[in-house]
Image 1 (cartoon, rainbow, N blue to C red):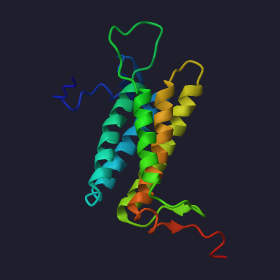
Image 2: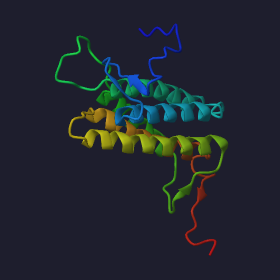
Image 3: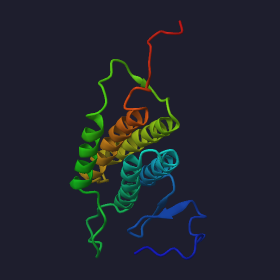
Image 4: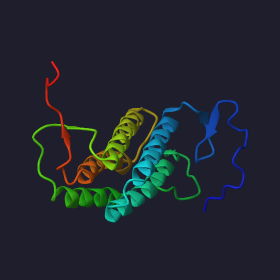
Length: 192
């Protein structure tokens, strides 16, 4: 269980932060950048949820995702090391990725296929979900970069979750636009 009874500790005043393993790293460490971007995505989803009242099913899915994003942050904040931790770290599991895939498929079944790219617009909920999607894509790029580093490990489900989440948010944004009826489509060269 997490207990936060003191919000500031002054331990980061030197430009470092603590990972879940207890190691101190620079605040700009690639691992910290990853879970920082995940936190930004989570916050953007929270703002989107302010507009989800008319769709309680989607709001419930977004609520589950917000919890999952804390799991993802915990996963990323706990690097795998050769030395045992003495406790079992929280990791994203394949079932969380599969749940996203199932929900994507269920939502997408009611939405007509696209014949152009979608602009991040339409309803307020849709626009906010697109913002969350682009932040999630950045988090995914950072996680992929971390996974490619020689001395770093990222669990495959963690990277897959970030990838699938951006797909989920795209389909959810279309759902929020009346299942695609309110989508604003890109018109190539329209303003030449």
